[in-house]
Length: 272
Image 1: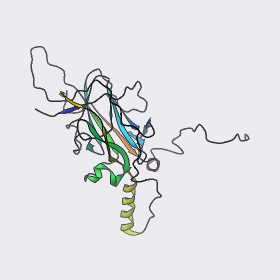
Image 2: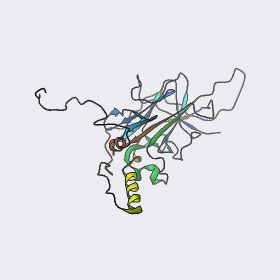
Image 3: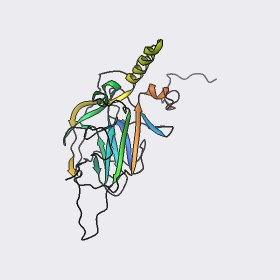
């Protein structure tokens, strides 16, 4: 009876919160090809990461509390478990106390996912299923578990997720998806309304989205979970786009976002 939640398999242990967003839960975006956590850029109260077209990624969620929590995950406005237009009342992943889980793709079954990868807007899963308006954002709504009743008191419980106590690594090696490249030059500006529409369409085409990628192993089970509240304890949102687009939006300023390069030159020049 009720809604079934998915129990997350433990995939990783995170000792710190570098490049993470959130208080009740840590959320990070991990580039699987570059094998690194993507740095977080904060701009006007929002959080952003730079995505690389064709690269697979995963969403890492870690429970920072001492009790169970439910994480309802959306990508581009779509629930990553059910494929429905995202609503925080829907299914998600249950994490034990201080447990972390890597969400590697769109949930296809209790054993398989379709990998997340950065792609052009038109090729995103959301756009291809007629929901293009919220492409470019990853969201996690976090709920605490309702406290157990006092001894002798009974109540109904809705089915929810419990995670297996074993590690399940991602299928490697991970390659790129070569469906597109978003590094092209801007569209030439024409005259009149049609030129404006073309420019807007070109801008949308250059925007990043998340594709429905290769099938790979990711094991979960069902477990029980009852929310402590109707509204989430916390909602975490991380926006993403190409480096070029984030520079154009003013999210990243100058050069390589102020990151010093260890080998910027070849020989020692004379001092000024």
